[in-house]
Image (cartoon, rainbow, N blue to C red):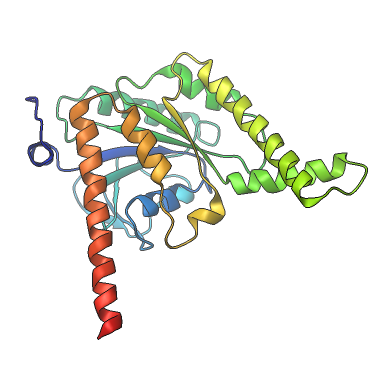
Length: 265
């Protein structure tokens, strides 16, 4: 691929940005994809032949084909592939995911290449990262950057508060309880980050998302967008990602203007 320096030329060469999103059922993967595309509508799933196979992917429901392309009409320039996490997946699924990453990271056609991986890890049960999950970061993903997303952080805060209340013998002021809760949750998250950073191929960035925030209609994934862009070392792909996201912002603005005129008429 020739070195292109402007967004229009890059989009012509590679019009879509391709992301593998990894995580077990109920990790919040679908919600993240919807937020990235600024929509609450269900996605459309195409198989490798371009045929629509589902309007509601099995991303939260188990077995499926990792090569299926998940898109949203609100911003079809993002293409998602879904895989279960290493801990939840069978040996066959783990093998398929490894093969998929290898194929998509080494392919010569930039349109078919994998451009980023989001590994979603829910932390609402405060359990340590499992050996199987750590193993993902010992395997390597070629040039494809991995961003580790801690999801359901609000659930971790709720659990941390319960643990603090159980440990303390006296009733705490609200401010004290809040500070102790945040400190405990922060300690847990830092411990998990340290474990991943000690692996052979650590995540390039860490992002934290709260489940309750992700359910609000006007929230976005600004931190995830920023960390993903920073993690992409190829300047052309970085520009492609930013341009696809910028197009999403333009659509939001246009929708807002239409809504404003609708309210005035």
